[in-house]
Length: 325
Image (cartoon, rainbow, N blue to C red):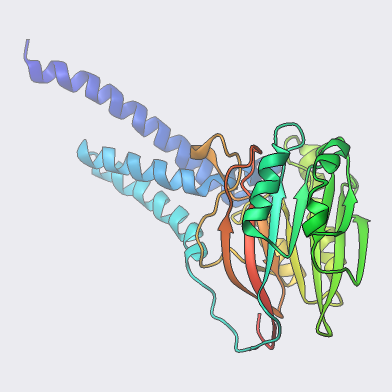
């Protein structure tokens, strides 16, 4: 038996499996652009980074196997995903503006009601020392174990719940006004706090839309995102929005929110900072966000350490600006 033929058979079979995976990846990538047509397609938009890696690997394997047409096809789909991801690595052009406040630090932690570790959460908050921190998925037990936070962040607005939609804002800066609001049919609580900084307003809006899964939950999420844009309006300015939005930057619903609410994504220029799920790094996607309106300039943005939750913390440094964004 010719040994070359014996080797080529298994290799052809392996290449066939790789090509099949590439076909599925390319189909999923293409369908992800059709989220407005069907809610399931929108779910496929969240994995652009994974499609990019898969399609590049498949294109390389096809090239090595001298399947050049297939290699070109998969490379084209990879470039399409790269074009969607690339804006996160390009900083937006900064509008001229005058700094109107000292640097402030905000922090977002989805603690995961049943999984997170309060001691690790408190330690991470202490390490970053934010001016205010938004905690999501807190219940009464979490609130009790977060008691030490009152020493450093004595101003608090909280709405604990047992269903993964509890929320709380803890601040070292006094509130000028703070309220809990409900937006959408599912009615998970959001909060809006107003601060006065040397006579200048700053609004911080925290929210946690329903996690999309089945059709009803996806519609509830989309409805809440629409109502957030309406609620923020032109009067709630300048505003910093923090929250696990259960949507990635590549979803049509995310771009609709930015456009309707007049917000910018603080991730622009800082790359894909994937936050969930912590224990599946190859599937990790960016669903925890910091958005800002004109009048706020984000200076830097980081992910925190694993605090036992299924989400990484998100930290942003920013300042108020006159005439900038």
